[in-house]
Image (cartoon, rainbow, N blue to C red; front, side, top):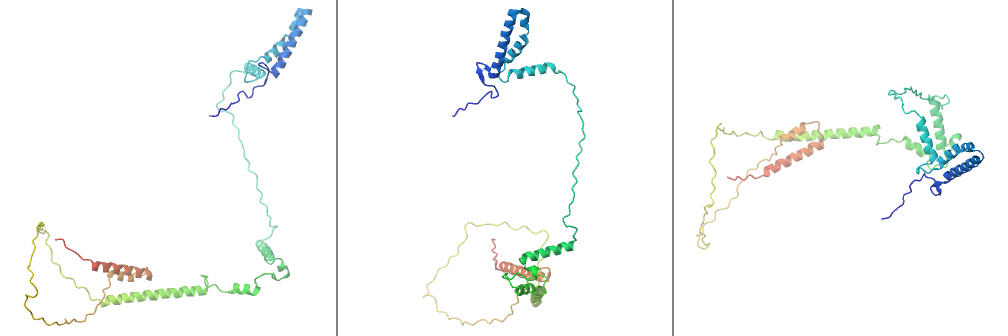
Length: 303
């Protein structure tokens, strides 16, 4: 694991001599000079030694290395300001109210049209567009001779009618013919269904015996785990008496006309005019498949 040294006291001044920085060393020299002057004045007259004492005390206090995090003069200035400033302050809960007015700058709408009307502007823009498209040849009243498209072919293409345009007469005629064809096919399908319905005889309903309100409960089922088995003796073919073979006659079958019965659901689809021909054909095919599957089902009784 790597170890890094984090610098501390980055704002502290560099030390020149022991704990004294360069500034403190200068203040110390001034204090020593003041002490020498006071000593010299005391040899002349003792009261004269008091004159340099304030200078000695001031610079001596500045030269003392009491605070490591900040210079001594900053610390002394903070102490003096703390002693001189008042210790009590009046608290104003409301504060000072000031009204700030925000005035939006006025936006002046500049007109760059030089007082031209709409028609004049469109005329000038069309003139510039023709000038750019013709590469300057429109000034002389001719088209661009270097263009790969000839004027007659371009005019012929512009004058041709687009059959895919919904607003053109050709497209409207095609849509009218398609609608007539759909109506004709729908009528043919309806006629076929009505013809098949009229050809089918009305179904006869067999009367069902009325059941009593309180039917007698059925006897419980009894299962025989040992069913009876019928056995017979097989005789050889040679021992059987010869029997006269009966005359084989072909049964006569009467021809019958097969008429397919149209289900009522298909007739209802034919009478519904909101459905298209494709939808009617698809639903009729589905109904016929369901009827065919229901006819082919075999019911096996378990009793």
